Image (cartoon, rainbow, N blue to C red; front, side, top):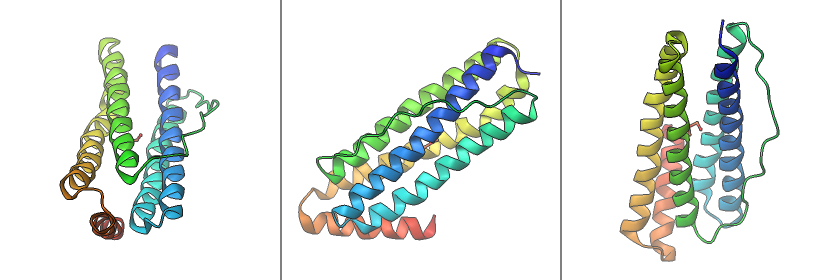
Amino acid sequence: MLAATMVEKLNEQINLEFYSSNLYLQMSAWCEDRGFEGAAMMLREHATEEMMHMNRLFTYVSETGALPLIGAIDAPPHEFKSLKEVFTETYNHECLITKAINELTHVAFTTHDYSTFNFLQWYVAEQHEEEKLFKGILDKIELVGEDGKALFWVDKDLAELAKTG
Ligand code: OFO
């Protein structure tokens, strides 16, 4: 049985994961529109992954006898200045998600909710991967620069990343 505050926090996280999914899906549309097909593919796949993050939480809340609640989800931004801005925002967003997961984990630990604490460990590890992934892409863009040719190769690289998962 979960405490009411824990359920509330987990439900907030469910919404955040929905937002992450919508954000990346919207970004993929921008990339597609600008001819960055690899980036579009990669972000679209990542949007699906975020739905998996959401579902995992949804199932956990439900299995512990509480009610998962889906609230209003903010519309994500749809205008970006450049591919670099897209990936700067993905990285910043993942840092924000890491903060939210850390806070959730802290609440679980300090309220002696060790079941939730244990459940959240998967997210703690996942956030490490998520930050690493987007920081890596951003570093690459910074390294090669932003002229057309450089971005063409970055995009090819992202297509490979999407294929290999
Ligand atoms: Fe990208 O990790 Fe969930 O939100």
